[in-house]
Length: 396
Ligand code: BGC
Image 1 (cartoon, helix red, strand yellow):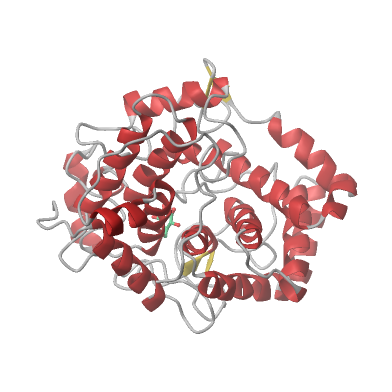
Image 2 (spheres, rainbow, N blue to C red):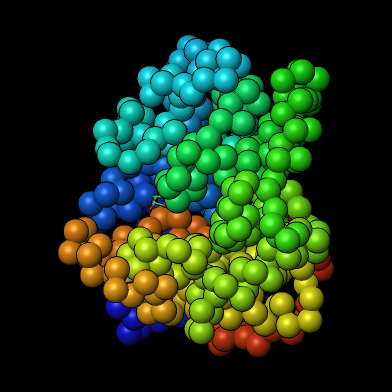
């Protein structure tokens, strides 16, 4: 249902921080959504992106708590991860009591649910987010540093295995977006501990993954053999920054995303065949698109990045809660009803949507501009390419 009220940007910024804070357990875990029946768990992927948004908003205390929670899980899982690595070296898939799960309950116990749990992007995104945390002044020490080394060694061995993607689908494939997350994670781990670069399995994986990113007619695809594009590929350029937006394969991917996955009002969809809640548009992908544009900095990109921010704001309800997706321009409108009948409306609030909003808001400098202007600003200047994402805000 379209939101009837769109709070001013500053309100949504504060509401986002409040919603994320309320969704953080004392363990440090972030619940995916406090209200949606299927999302009472803490995903590594969601949490790592939430932590990034908090770093950018100056809430290093909260992102630090999350990293401590992940580190405890990883250190505790060391023996199982070792067995998973032994199996992977023999070309076998690891068992559920060996691999790191994609989500846990808020106390860090393996969550009991019916969804695929083997997803290698999560630890990759976590490593990337952890390095981001340190880069923004967070402390990464002791057990957290140890967990980062364990996660890097684990990914360096398991990366060629098929697993469910960022959308928890198609576990039989090796997904390009997952490889991109692992790649970002390994680079981040090496930046945290240079000695990892000299470990043979890490060195081999870093070199090999870059050659395994599958393409069709020059643009990245969902997996090798697929011709489809997926908006999660945006993360390569923003926020991972493992590729420049102008890199030819990424540029070709971006133009496919723009022509195939962005509908009339500017929201970004996951992929063309998506039927989950009808395959609507996702605020968190729309934010990633805006962040890619900021990094590219071509004529008109700044205006389009502001339009992405405004699109997200229009999806907030009167309590400033953002959903996972909106169905206004769904790719499969006839499939929306079945999901609503099963689980109710799309998850709202989704913490990751709020974090993505915070990140785009900070990178646009929306906070400063709106505080100074007291009104909605018009974009004035093009940002320096590469300067986006490197700006901190004081804690609210
Ligand atoms: C999404 C995942 C996400 C999970 C929790 C799933 O529907 O596809 O990307 O991690 O929800 O938000």
